[in-house]
Amino acid sequence: MNRTANSALVVWTLSSVCAVASAVGSSESFEDGLGGWAKDGAAIGRPDLSAGVTMVNTPVHSGRWGTVLNIDGGNASSAVWLEKRFVAAPGEHTVTLTFWVWSPTRTDAHAADVLASIGPADPETRADLSVVGRTGVEAGWAQHSLRKQITLAPGESVWVGVGFGLNSAANQKFAFDDVTVEITPLRDGCAADFDGSGSVTAADLAEFLSKWLSGSPAADFNASGGLDMLDIFEFLRAWQAGCETRG
Image: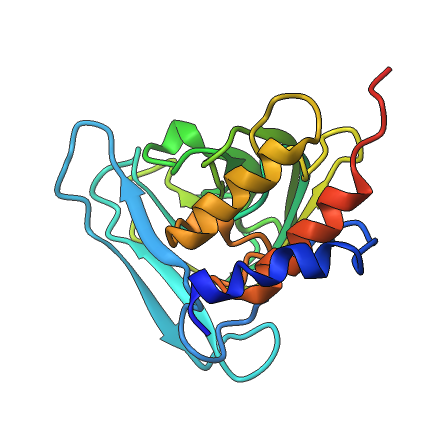
């Protein structure tokens, strides 16, 4: 069925849904490429940043494949990271990010900052990412994490980034693996308040269907990467559940 025909199912389905929308979860071990993650980077005062990402089969934290990020070291302010956009409903969310980074040796010499970001905007500079650790604290794999509470306006997405930034002019490369993202709507954030009005009404249903029928990524309610009937079912569950009155 096309989207126009499918929309006729909405009224029929409304009476049969009653559960709260589930959290958005993603776990990437890079077994089939980057899995939608894309490389980005920045260097203060030097636009010709030389940085890259390579798929490797050693070292890996789990599975058979992982990634290595590298910078040529010509600029001590350089940073490189992987980033990915996740679609979530408007409202308040708690976002938890965990990932593993491999350092070849335990050393303080030329240690780099481990960087991570969570927010509603695409990270474009090193300052857009937070320092969550240091490389070389121990040889081998070390886990890092970042947790933030963010508020999404209608049409906004959750952007997540992981990478590293240099503190000295030295060639550096580190492996990254097992990146996990958990996006949990807050109960009083109310994922069903799709138009951000502060309450759940028929206008939210109309706004969601309008986005879905037009093919807007904002209607990817279950963050599957595309639009299908499951997005409507998930939204209807949240819409019928409504929101608790805010204190």
